[in-house]
Amino acid sequence: MLDRWAAALGGREKLEQVRMVHSQGSVETGGVRGTFERWSTWRGEFRMALDLSGAIRQVNVFDGKQGWAMDSSGAVHELSGGNLRSAASSAYEASESFLFPGRLAGVVVFSGHDTNQSAYVVRLEPDGGNPVTVFLDENTFLPKREETTGPLGNPRSITISAWRDVEGFKIPSRIIQSTGDPKFDIVIATEHVEINTPIADGLFTKPTETAAQVHFTNAAHQAVIPVDVYAQHVFVPVRVNGSETAWFFLDSGAGGSVVTKAWAERIGLASEGAMRAVGAAGATSLALAKNVVLTLPGVELPMPSVTVLDATAGMPELGRRWDGLLGYDVLSRLVVRVDYEHKEITIIDPAFFVPSDHAAALPLTFLGNWPLVSAKITLPGREPIEIKCFIDTGAGGLMLSTPFANANHILDVVPKSVASSIYGAGGESQRFEARLAGLQLGPYLLRNPVAGFSPDTKEGALASPDIGTMVGGEILQRFTVTFDYPHHRILLEPNSRFGPP
Image 1 (cartoon, rainbow, N blue to C red):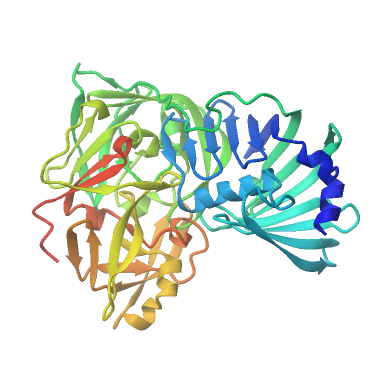
Image 2 (cartoon, rainbow, N blue to C red; image 1 turned 30 degrees about the vertical axis):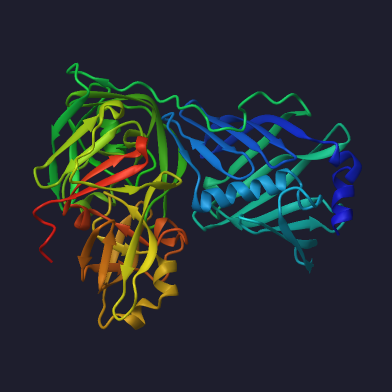
């Protein structure tokens, strides 16, 4: 089967001579068009640069073992969890390691003949990557479809609808990537391909950060901002392109900053498209507004783009007016110290930040743009379990992920549970609540916390196998929390609320 696949692509002899492929083309999703440029090598290195209408710019790099992502803000972080597995799978396929032993390691399994799809089925299992099921056309032996999981563990399919011949071997020329909802499909068309061109120095190394300069208006290196703390959410006064004051809440669970559709219409902020965004409880649709300046007291933040969200359904759940949120594209460029007790945040230039001697530093990794720290969960009558904890200031309390809750049979372990709901970017999903024995963050043990969990979340952070729990404001308000993304850490300092149940 592999011999026939290789022959369909142009033959092993020709394929083995390909050491590097450089391709360019167009991308369209949610009514927004853009371009991509990709480099890949036989060793498993690749670099992908994406520009969607100038509003979203991303660069992903993988050197065969580790990878990095640079988002629209220009900030860079190392790939981990599902993002790293997805990169490893992409590298395994792009390097055609399934045809040539000695390249990237993996296993290839022949799974039979699917008469419904008129295809032979081959499963690729790259070391360190997500398995990929490939459907080979029974007549041409070229891949016609692939099924795998995305970085967050959600199903993802790829349909190859056209091929082109380049110097004697075939390359997909049109790909449709889908997660199940056609309006969020991504259509990728390859328009130009070069083979074995010289590789520029540093092409497959960590990208250089290009974040726009943050301007402190008081000629200092920090700004102290009074905030409202309501229902464990931190509300910050913000002006958008010089508008009247709006109220944004700080959301470390947001991949980018957001302006509500109602506020965008009120201030005449133009937007376009319908992009897909994933939150705690699922997915929703976002439009894009380009070249926005967010002004907070004492600091100006130029943004290549912000997303525009129809938040009508979600606004009643917060219990007060909100006009937007500050997400990863703000936190990634600064040090942000959140003092829940005194109702203020301090925004600090990372080059001048000195941490408190009384704070504990928790090393930080990212799943996409979501911040993760190591933690321990103790269930009644059991030993502590080490997990990855998603720190989400946009969430209300403590939530266990569905994979963790199901794997540990939470409903069977806890003596009592009650039913409730969780509201996130994708809407409402059912959850239960129960009391755990403990949650440990660094040196700090919180005893007998109440945690929510859902047995059937299919999408979003709480469906990810890389996340054990999500910690929101109900827990975070017991600390002064410093988000120091530039130095890959979150700092926790207990306040007077730490002791009470």
